[in-house]
Length: 347
Image 1 (spheres, helix red, strand yellow):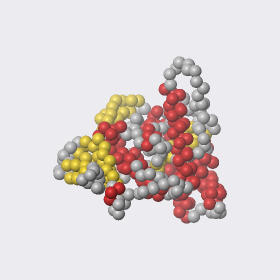
Image 2 (cartoon, one colour):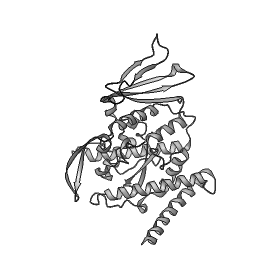
Image 3 (cartoon, rainbow, N blue to C red):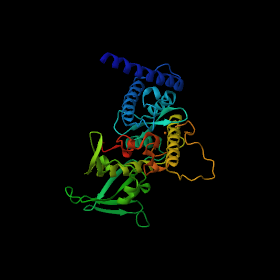
Image 4 (cartoon, rainbow, N blue to C red):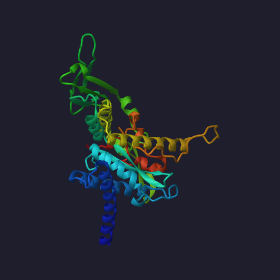
């Protein structure tokens, strides 16, 4: 049995690597992968294999009769996207770089793979492709017992700044807000302070936020049946901090002269993913009454081009709706920690 499983894994891995090798060769006119590129490709295989397994465990066969397995994956598109993501520098083996989510394409009857940037992935892309990257980015949460005073730029202050003091580090009180600060060493007049109230942070929380991350009521299951709910604290503070962190790096303008084919590929794929999500959500929640319009087919995934996967440019839509899973992958997956916005509590 062990031998059979090993052979199966080798076959899947070989198929994946063959597709990636072929795409690399055609993209860079080279016959073989470099050692670094091969390691990245292997990391994508391992991460996606785990994502497929978890998604298959949650699949509702009554609503979706297509198994979520390697045999159902659109390998051609996956190879293109993996090559682009790897060349950008996103590594699924690194914490919070990138997550992968399978979603059914009803037109091809295959699963496409949505690539979701983690907060470190957002930082990496901002630094690599940014037009005017700050020398430092400071992200802080402000608690009720802290002292925080913004110093805005005006006729008296040529440089935007702030005063922040943690007066009691062991009893800071509840979170009341936060801020990020872009600092430019040689051009301090460009320094920028952006302040968030607690409500501003919560508005960016995912619609289907996992209680394991954000706190709240968590469903308890016993023998496959719902046995009640328990209150959990989750990792609320870390999730609030990551929300501001993502906004801080999304605020860095992308330099059009630095954009390459790999960035465009990821961006276009993200746009397609977001468009499909929107169409499927509209199809599920639209009024039942007939209306006199001619909409595009719900199963049309949009142009085949792919992924600040916070949803395309709609700033996750900063609100992270970019991370809400496609409706046809069943609602249970919306509670998946890997699919949940903001990468979970880990750093």
